[in-house]
Image (cartoon, rainbow, N blue to C red; front, top):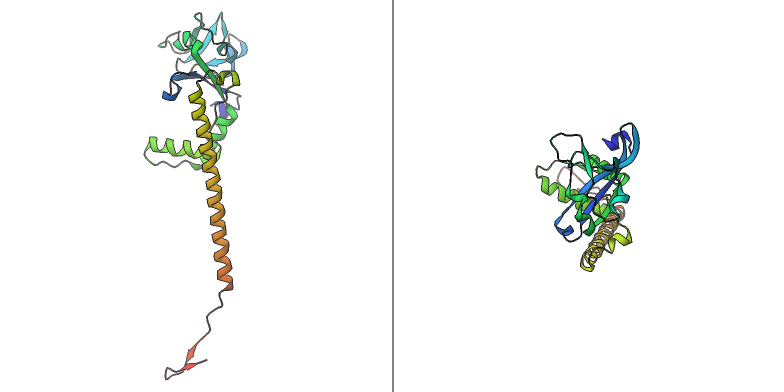
Length: 212
């Protein structure tokens, strides 16, 4: 909907640095919002279905990167069945890592899916194919973190990221080499076809003898 309406937005990742490998964490969206007739830039918590607030103002990324627990956060929920609190704005912030994914990067990936998506009938396989393919082609939306945020990860996790990047670039280089080799094969075939002399015409008389 944000892409359709042309709204500038950012996906914010609240990652648990000790369990990032297991996918632990939380995601929210930062975008322009209007509350009580006042416009502001704030977070929308999709899971809780509302806007996290402190002292009546919506919080944003700058509040998260302080890595301080915000016990006074209340979520102005748009769904009466949701809680007005969340553990992700408490003590977990002190030991977390904040990253962002730009809306432009997400929109580009969504456009890529629109052009290439084919229903295979196996959602997990489709996710693997399109995510890995998107990474190799450079259209999968990256997560940006500052140097100070990156330093909150342990050295082993940073090494894993470096290895993953190396593997992606190696795959890209191999694909380019494969495409270049295929192009050379086509060129060789075309040249060989042009150099091959046409077959000579052969006629026979009514007795079956060859007449050139």
